[in-house]
Length: 334
Ligand code: KG4
Ligand code: ZN
Figure 1 (cartoon, rainbow, N blue to C red):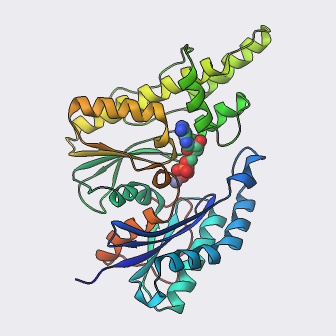
Figure 2 (figure 1 turned 180 degrees about the horizontal axis):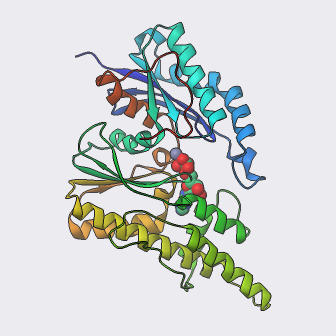
Figure 3 (figure 1 turned 90 degrees about the vertical axis):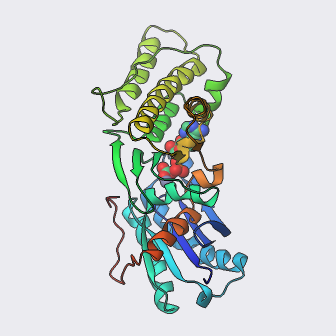
């Protein structure tokens, strides 16, 4: 019963991250170098700039994670890395760093799906109970995932167009808010006494899929029409209306899925899970339904490598190893 220390590496988007996790549950070190400042003035992540930053940071970040953990490479059981999905150039930096590290220190390599990572962030804070429903909601994803047991993922619903965070960022941009816009809309929505009514996009009856581009368009149209009429719009009323619509639909579908699949635990993950309005809404419905509901703390909601090491530990225990032929897989299925 030896302790399992796994080094996690994450470079799928705009954070260069490395972490050491013990037994899939305990964070020993967790280093994240964020690039947000570099992408801000472009209003979104620029892939070429992301890759460049990853190249500059990756070695330093890995060394720092090991130094903070006070571990030598030979004390590690494996190296886990985000294999996909994500920006291909960004993924390649992490995958190549992981391969080089694994080769140099004769360690097994584990390729992790980024979304599995977001889900396993929860295991660093509480035990996972199955069957489980996960709502993964971020800048790149909006998915409802059913898990019968560890490592077993069934996507029961996903976005047909924009991810929720993407819609947040685009609406924020039309309100002249800085990137990433999610937290700014959240803040304005909270401060607002009034909310404009925007449509709720439920799709076909019974569907667990999401769609946010229609909602985004109706916000843009609303702004456009007001400008044409020469009216000034209170940004907080728009923010509150948009957020109400997102929160109502996401909460509604998540609750219905939790009941239909009769799950023992519901977890939320990803950057948008940090949203105050959504948190409050989900917490209150699941309290009422008496279904345990968790959201990881903020640093574990957004991209990090501890979640990759945590998910990688489960794969390591199942013997699911990658090879030196591993590549970044931008469209990797869960
Ligand atoms: O998980 P994450 O860090 O990166 C991805 O894998 O996408 O999520 C980033 C996204 C951005 O779109 C950001 O605007 C959104 O999460 N976000 C929020 C909030 N905080 C971050 N959206 C709504 N409300 C928030 N408080
Ligand atoms: Zn993410």
